[in-house]
Length: 283
Image (cartoon, rainbow, N blue to C red):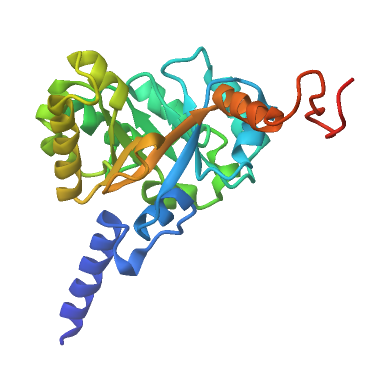
């Protein structure tokens, strides 16, 4: 091979490595353990967080969940509060995912700048919305994420800019019949990692019970098209035994506190309940 051809081949390899960072010769450092587990064929479960209390967040982050689903669509949580929560437990094993209100540049930029490694986008029913979710979550050349300030570097390392595109995951939620109708196109959008079958809103938008065969047909279409596209399939934790589902949204902190109290108090006689903190009988 001539020297010129060698140089051209080397230049081509360098270009491909930049365009396709997941290629074997340019494998980025992987620190998103959720993505690692999914790629190994494992299931992942996330606890849902509505509160702005860092102590509760930390307890959830250390409880054994693979990730925390930080709820910013249906809660009054603010980004400065969530940033402090994530920082308070920066070494916890649960990876921070944020469900944003919409696929806007502002919402996504703030979510990833404060350190989220997962962006959950609700109400996706157009290809344009799915593409926007990817565009604002990923740095060039894949997307159009702006390189600004944030705590992401202190959380994930000095090579964050080079590794973020491999580690930040995009989860799109299919919540309406309109979304189901085009789920094949949505799942095929490059950069979308996970497609979530939103059980509650699919029932709400259609008026169909989950036992209705028409409802089940919607779920089957999401299932089939997502797996056909080679993407990960998500749903509520109640569906953890369904074929093909590997990514699950678990219960929120209030449900877990209630369940924990019920387990603690089970089998104790009225007036003779044990103190939750010490195990001593409460007088």
